[in-house]
Length: 174
Image 1 (cartoon, helix red, strand yellow):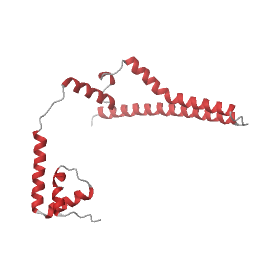
Image 2 (cartoon, rainbow, N blue to C red; image 1 turned 180 degrees about the vertical axis):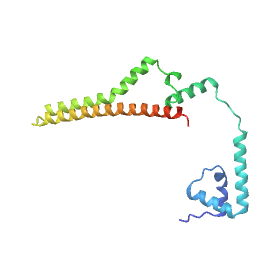
Image 3 (cartoon, rainbow, N blue to C red; image 1 turned 45 degrees about the vertical axis):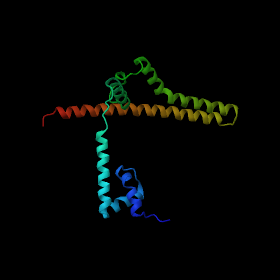
Image 4 (cartoon, rainbow, N blue to C red; image 1 turned 90 degrees about the horizontal axis):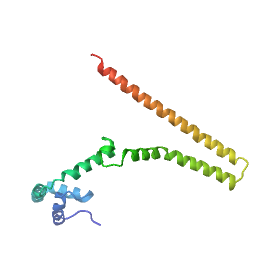
């Protein structure tokens, strides 16, 4: 199959090239042909001019201010730049409850899986070391939880220390 396009085929693709909707090989062929052919270069320039004028002649329709402000507040709350209370969000008590649930949801899943493992080994496979394996795995999960908590505290303390050091450096005369 021949991939090269004729002059007429490339000329038909010029409006699509002006709208920038061509991809890959077609776009390369059209732009290369427009560099070589003065008539196609002139047509491509005129099509691009029409596209630019079309974009500026469409009537502007501003966003209504009330929904725009609410939408902006919601978007900023999702990105963490503003507190969620400024957006139309649930009451602070409700958000605190959801925060608590989200914080402990992972641990609840881990505890449920550990319980499932214990039940599985005690009912379905009463192996000599089943309870021992379940106990060891539960202990590993508990130790991992303690380790994670210690690291979180150390990280927060390090951030606080870093912020204090930066304030001290900025207050010193140079």
